Image (tube, rainbow, N blue to C red):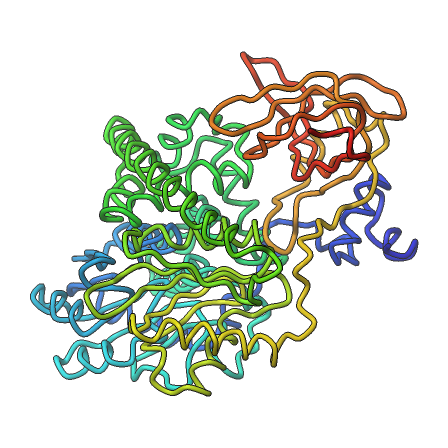
Length: 562
């Protein structure tokens, strides 16, 4: 519980909001200021000047942007192309590896594909810091490479012309949690300022026009929302709500039934992001990039419909894989779950294993790595972790103790990817378990939900729900408030595929309120239950009402559920 002094230091705001912010580590009112002036200085990012100078030096020649096949990579690619074209650069293209043909990052193979277009510069976005062989191939072909990335570097850095990454060793940049699109934004901001200093009127203002792309990539990549990232996301959301976003974002919001003028971070994370991601998971991320690049709304809507169709296919594939993964871990029994759960089936789709890892993690409450066959020799693994377990460090420890076991790996604290010989899987499972025991002997596998305490019954109203929505942006490391409380079940029914629709009344008295528990259909609840929930605003046919989004339902007695 934050001290009264910390709460008071946040200034003249509602005490309940002040307590929420203080519990999230905010100690000064300035940390609630999301104006652009609060961004970490552009010049504070190491190597940014050399990078901008390199880009400007190639303005009259061909530049190819090499992206990644997720939302962060797609938004980074679209941002750089839009900015450079608006700056007046002569010839800018993009190239994103098909994950099934070339794999991740700037590989030697994708460099040779790029070389056929005779570029004067390759710029990587959201990848490149681990592309040692790819950069070496580019150097051999006489093509300079500018790496912009945010992933954690390995022991060896690529021999690129310039590397811009806030996670390089010795970096003093105050916001090391920038997404790939955040790094790309900083680069474009520096290029714009340099161009304006050289006489290009208005160039410095160009990158801020695309903060909607920065917000989307930042939220979708689930990077921690420190103050700097909250500024970027907030500013991007303002542009979307004002109707000043790229038409692709407007189209996807419309197609998914979301309202642009009320867009919040969860709309980006659960509506826009998954649709773009699906194209990279199953087919080719270029349809998502093209949706973000077009200025024609009709074209964007066609792209949005295509993305939605691909996303529906992704959901079907995921549902089958999820059932198989759940059957495997359930048959194993919770008492036998290892500290790091590995799941694999030869039939699984490698573009969807990251989602399966996340679903199994929710079920097992421990780090999970899901594998699929990459080809006849190798498995592609996608890892998702829990608080307190740095999954990339775990993979690095396994690799150090067993050289050659992991072909390659990379990622962050909460998510990582790896390539493994199929025959090494069983030994890898044992090695991962040993390193978990060594590095994280006190890891918390309870799955307990940490809440902000009880919400007074009279606070469950539309006004307070709106104020919580507007107090964001919420996200990773700055979580949306979650409350706990006892409620009497008034009504319940199953809706959609597996969702529980409830009407409940606070046990201490108060008005009946709607509630929805996603993917929690099953038991029939009676009497009074304890809920962990978020207070949301639900709009139906133009009418807004408060709604509880239930994270967990706990019967108070055995008789309350059957």
